[in-house]
Each structure stands twice: as structure tokens, then as C-alpha cells.
Length: 636
Image (cartoon, rainbow, N blue to C red):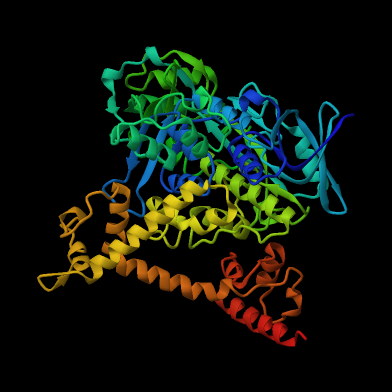
């Protein structure tokens, strides 16, 4: 048996895994990324797309903190679109379709060039714990890897099982073995695990479809990028007509050498269209006639599925009055012969899937490359975590991604970054990195998980955030700046650029507030719906469009923004009242039994978190507040 030792061990090479490993390594910690196969790191198991409503906000926050997913998407994207363009700035979002082969190839190239980061190919079978503290891991080949802290990011591999009709296959992904022993290890330690379910559509050949029967959906020009690096490079090429040098790219990509795999093409080059078609009454009849053959409705799958991204069987059953459902035809890459028919996720037998697909306009002669399937896997109750994503049961052990009950590449990546950063900060004895609900969607995500838990795969939506107007996609860099400066992952050159932008925005808004025109301030004129910033007297023509948008939003929505800030200030009073981890809730007899039980289970870190626990009401919080005040006054 060989033994290696690292500061940080990350188990799992999915989106949570690569963000956790890169964050830890970029902070200077000697990090091991342990994954079954190196060439599967960053693989997009389902749809090769990033972003969407609220999810894009998370990606922009990751980029603003120095994470990788935004750059990764922009430099491998084949189509970029902005969603909700007719709605307000709080709910507008970016969505990109990526090249399924270039995406993992790029992240693997970045990892290869990242100092302090070592990739180990192995299947983790056991987590080693001594006296409640993480010590290391054991692998299937008998290797012992010791570490000071660990981030576990197993995705759907924990006791994973794939279902195609009544056929059941042990797998974490198609043709990849599950991590069943690791699941047993977690149960043995004492973690509470349950089952969740997700699924994927069949893949069909790109040349077997009749696109004339479908509605074309082209990308947006200029492309709306996620990352600052891609936006700056686009500006260099298309506005300043110059190419960035390697030194600039090394700083942007956080690497020592820029390989061709990191820049498979210029960001936004030659966008590829998607198409829109729909199911028919024939489609619905085929599914209804074969429901008992579906793993989901035939009883083979017991885990809870994604309510907001239902399988095609679920759509037909739960929305029986609908005549048709959208099917988005999405290519999987530039040189890829596979099409992803988004909206046809299912767990039907392959022969039924084929009939179903052939009933959809434009897909009458579709050739299958691979059938769709459902997948069921273990997850850990996220109320077993602190806000740092460290487990309450084992010190220095962190969970991130689908193990915490979430679904989606973006939610996983955001958790991975937070877990990786916090693991390093704890080893250094520094203050933890905790994002508040009022400052980020990542903060909303984590607080929802650790405070409320989840009994279904959690997806991020703008409706989950109380302060949506403050948490815009466009101002992510400014919201995250204090954290980015503290953590030091973001390059100093980029930090200086963001700081200068913040200065320009504040100075220009001050000018608009004081400069008068015909007895009215320019800021009041800008609040008129028909007036835009470039129409104002003295408007700065050299300002970047992103800065102009930020100025317009802050001025036009000033009253609403001020009210949200006032709400945050009021709520912050409870957030500042900490609760000792060993607080005796049973001693507070005035608390209702349900409230005591919920508080003992969650062990909230402050009064604000306690107020958000389901089953704890305002009267309970008032009683708890009085007791906490008495406890503090009783201290010597």
C-alpha cells in the first residue's frame, strides 16, 4: 500500500470538483484531485449548456471570484443567447450551448497547467476519520491518500443506477462504474443518505433530422459572454483590432502556459443555430400506452425527480390537457454528429423511445446514437452541513454538488468553489468565506440547502432570492469584489480593472444627480422610460456598454434598490445575533416542541438563519432572542 499526503483532497472531477480543486490550488494549497478517469474531468453528462434563469447569475459570481466555469463556457461556446430580454434586469439571463468535447478538453488543459494541483486516477472507496476529524481516503487499488481537508464531489456516482425501461444498470454515468463502496462508507460514518433521480434524453444523429420542419433559433450578436476574459478579448479583436498576447492570456486563465486546448477558438466565433420543434398528439399517445414500461411509472425508480425539469412521461401525465410540449434541437459541438433533443428526457424502453422521437416533426427519420435513461443515486441531507459546506459530523470534510441535493452544472460549480476556498481558509486559521443571501445567488443556494434541506433535486431560480434587483447578473463583479480582493484568486490586474469601473460608475451617477438641465437633474431625466443614457447631456461616449447598463439600472431603479437595501439592513439585525453551537434549546421551555426539534436538528448559526427554518415561527424567534440576550448578559 502506497501513501501520499496533500493539504487538500478533492474527490470527483465534475463541475464541483474542478472548481474546488482549482480554488484550493490557486490559493497555494497542495491539492490532489482524485477521479476515476482523468479524461472525464469536466464531462457534461447531460445537456452541454451553461446558464439560464438565475443559473447564469451563479456563473458570473464564480467568474467574479476567480473561478473557471465562465471562461470555460465562453471559450468552448457554440451559441450564446440572452433570456427574458423583454423583462426587467433582475431576471435577464445568459445561456450558452457548448462544444461537448472541447469543454472537458479545455478544463483538463487548465488543470495540467495549474501549480500545486495533482490529478490522481483512482476510485475512492472509503473515507478515513479519526476522533471525528478527516484523515484521508482509501482507493480501490489499495492506495492511501492522506490530507488535512477533503471536498467530496461525487455527482451521480454514489450508488448510481441507470434505468432504460425495466433494465437496471449499476453506473454513475453511461458506461461508467458507480461509487457504491463510497456510499457505504458515508453511511458507516453516520451520514443520512436518501435517493434522488434525474435523467437525460436520447441522442440522435445530426444528419438524420429535417430542419425545414423546425423553427431556427440563432445565437445573439454580439455574443453575451459570462467571463471578463472573453468580454475583454472580444473587445480587443472587434473594437481595438488587436490580439491579446500570451502574457495577458496567462493572467486571465491563471496558468503558467496557454495551450491550444485553452483557446479552441476565439470566443463567440461562428455561432451554430439551435432549432425548435414540438411533441404531437401521437407522441403523447405513444407515451401513455407505454407508461407501465417506464422505469419512473413502472415502479423501478423510487427516488424523487426534478420537479422543474420533468421527464417527458411526467409532462404527459401531469399536464394532460397540453396538446404539445417544446422540444429544443441542440447540437453537441462543432465537429460532433450528436443532437440533444432537449425536452425528451425519459426512462422508457429503447424501442418505445424510438417511436416517440419519430412522432415529432422533423424527427421522423431520426437515427439513434444512444437511448435516453433515468438515473437514481444517493445524496446526503444538506442540513448536515455548515454554511462553509463543512460537514457537522466530520471536521475538515466538505460536501459540494449533487451530493447536497442540487442538480445542474452551475449549482455544483458554485458549491465547489465555496468548499475549496473554505477548506484552505480553515487550514490557515482564517475567517470563513460565507456569502449572504443578500449579496449573491450562491449565498441563497447554500443557505436554502443547509437551513431548509431538500427532498427533491434543487434548482436555482430568481424567485428563490428575496433581493433580486440587487443580485443582477450584470453587477456580479461589483457585488463579489470585496470577497475577490480578500481571497486573492482573481488576478490583481483584474481587481484593479473592476475597482476602476466601480469608481467610474459612482462618479458618473454623482454627476447625473447634481447636473441640471432645464431645472431637472440628469438623473431624474434618465428615470423617464423613454430616455437612455447616451441621450443625456455630457454622456461619456467612451464608456463600455456594460457600464452604461449598470448606470441606467442604478438610476432608473434607485427607489426600488433603496427599499431592498433598507430591508437588508433590518434583516441584518438578526443575522448579527450568533447562536452558540452547543446552545441548549431544551432549556427554552417556552419554545414549541416542533420549533425545538427543528432548531436542534439544524443548529442554526445565527438568529436570521433560525428564522428561515421551516416550522419555526416569529413568536419562536422572539422567545429565542430574549434567551440569547439573557445568556450573553450572564457571561462574565
